Image 1 (cartoon, rainbow, N blue to C red):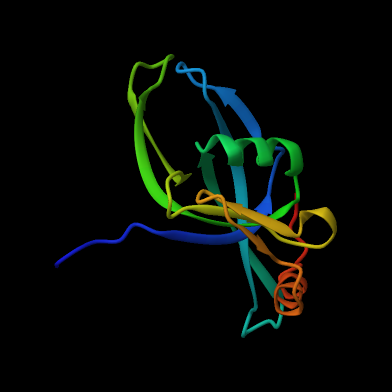
Image 2 (tube, rainbow, N blue to C red):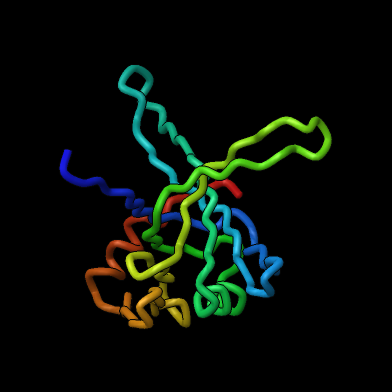
Length: 151
């Protein structure tokens, strides 16, 4: 294999308000809990089924952290592009090594876009460009994905 790719694309809803923390270097970091769901009808019973996956999102870019802090709340629908990262940490109680896999939004090839109507129509990416989700196509996608997510 000549190269490799580590890219994650997700559209989902926040399961909780963003958590903003200060790192030891004084910079802020945002942590998000993102739910993605898929639904289908059971072939045997005709009953509607749903499966929800939870994703940990970590935002290191200062500009995006400010946007997250100001505009994102529980239930907000977002689109994220980032990289999968597994970090190792030590459990304080047991002293055992633990691992967390997260989607990291950092660097030029990452972005976070707020979806939906109203003031959440714009998007911010790490290259300081803005994209608008106010067009008819994106509004249609947003409406199609408005499933009832149980939070």
